[in-house]
Length: 330
Image (cartoon, rainbow, N blue to C red; front, side):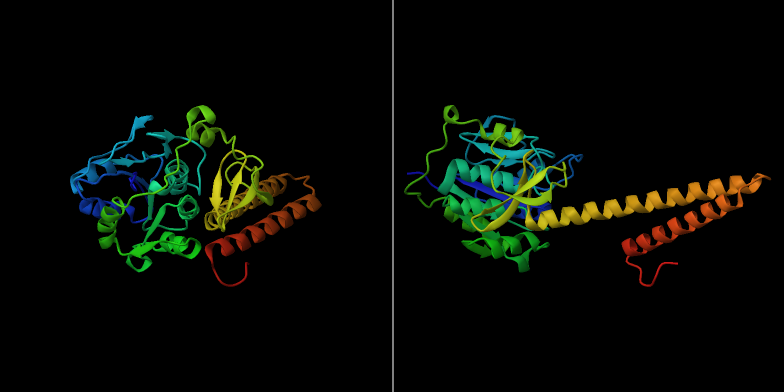
């Protein structure tokens, strides 16, 4: 009888210290494979495997693509790569970002749940926004166990709070109690485990993720565009949790999409400030050129002066809005 032998863990801000502390207290004879995703810069070098291996009894490593899944090991997502679970093996992928991240917690949770169903225990730890919430809902849909760090105990409580608000979580507890809970859950038998999907019956999960062939047409058109590629976003609810996905495969939870839109809006406004200031600079240059010309066109000079002042006024108004400064523009 199979047990809960697939442990999936996701963290973001504050995750290095939190994952290190958790690894320190995991039992050395843990009869389960542990998979960890932490949001890192795609250009960074990750020392997480070495840190986790020194901290606790279980060896940790960035897996090779296609490496077999073995109990008693920690598999850490490499920077700029999703960690994908397939039957009996772990894959790494540079598929489209989800919630603006690669690796993304949702990818790990979703693929693990789809392959191993009730054998999965998924853990959401400290972090900003809500990566992991949709994936945790899918874990519950496939009869897995959902564990969330107590938001009051987390350095950054947004990810745990989102998970608790949106998913029927099984356990909420401080970090200090999670390792011992995992040690208990892995020994719980699963009466009716779901058979893993057969490779000959479907495209591999990694390939689906990278090509997006299972994404098109799923969900209703949202009327919104993808912040990453400009494609149409389709709106879906996974067990009551709203999320969005484009045909390319970029995916967003609601909070992550709102944050990305705000970031894009700010970038657009700064671009508008630059364009207005360049327009004013060009108008002033033409104005000075006319002033040096003895046969200058006074009307044209006045027009350039007026245009430069108007562009400067608009640029100043936008800059004040972006900087959060009170008062009216000059």
